[in-house]
Each structure stands twice: as C-alpha cells, then as structure tokens.
Length: 129
Image (cartoon, rainbow, N blue to C red; front, side, top):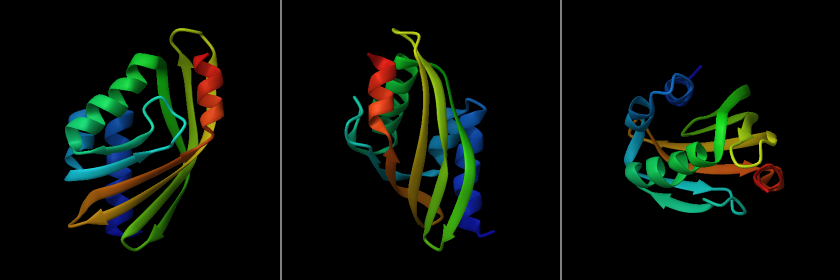
C-alpha cells in the first residue's frame, strides 16, 4: 500500500476518533473540498477552516452518529479513491441515512490537496426532510 493511501487512511482514522484537528492536519492548507452538489453544504470549499466550519459543522448540525465505513481504497498514485457507506440519523427528523460514497483525493506534497465527493444526495435529502 502506498504512502498516499496511508495518508488518506490516517485522515479517516482521525475522523473516526472524533479528532477533527488531526484530520485537518492531513489537509493541505489551501485544500479544495468539492462537496457533492445537491447537499445543503454542496459546492466548493477552500481552506481548512472553511471545510471544518461549512462541511463538518453542517454534518454535526444535521446528523447524530454520523459515521463512514470503508469497503475499498484504490491507489492511483497521486490520487486515492475511497469507497464505502455513510450512516447517521438526521437530527430534526429522526430518519436514518444509509448511502454509498466515493471519495477521490488528490495528494500534493504529502497532503490531501483536493477532494471530490460522490454520493446519492437524494438519500441525504430524504433523511433531512
């Protein structure tokens, strides 16, 4: 397994422990986060602070017990693809979320520089409404 896959896995491990600062350390200072369009926080977020506030903050506001399980990591050199599933409970509706995802990471200088997010946004909308 390549160093880039290990970098991505370490960011996910920090997230799973609830250690957002350690996760953010894996991100390039000018990270570009391309959240799936169709999500309330969808679109491009630039920089660690924007990702922490606009993406992670939104997830914590809208969901309880948000977690990811990974099925596969694909090593593409400077690109790493993570495939898996989300699960959570929408805070306002109590509805469950269960959706597959694909995360594409581009690494630069040993850091996560760009993130591209693919998921079934309808499942997020159904849980939230």
